[in-house]
Length: 236
Image 1 (tube, one colour):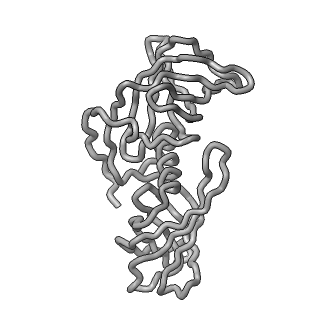
Image 2: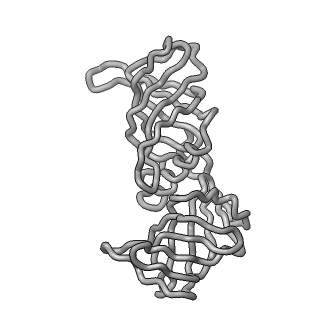
Image 3: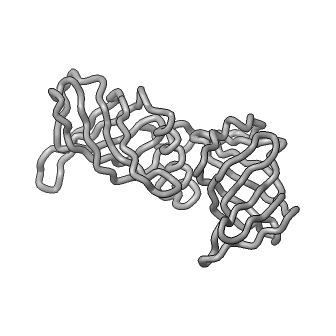
């Protein structure tokens, strides 16, 4: 459960696949019309490798921002442990009712590594279950979460010999915020005991995921990326 910031190395060339782009992936679209670049948020609609990428046109004050064919853009994506960026140009703009834009496929992608254990502060209801709980889920709350693990707190003590557990919780999946149930196998790495306001014991468990569905991994990536871009105070 390290919380210190690691030194980030200089950007390096990475493969396009390093970005793990999927439909609905949240990304940052940067325009360069002024002296200071302007940041907007968009999401991926799709792409044809080596030809073009389709993005949703960012909205501002309820209206799509203006984009012109040939305009230079920078796209920034969080891949889970890297912030990746690439330059592109607007190839075609689709207005109402689609509000899509085709941009050129990148000729190169730059990636800057972030610390693997980057976590996001959350307050998610969840349950813990394992062989020692005799199949009965124990209520808990997730305090922080990442692609590699979680910190949870519970008024219930897990059996001392419990090494592998399942953490069950729900996340909102883009682009329509559909609720997705996640069941992640995890190993308990540390346990702390504190006191609640009513002087009862609270058990805090540091967990490392040992089995995570690729789709669920992507959801956690997107959650971390949005927190990194929109509210860095949520980053642990």
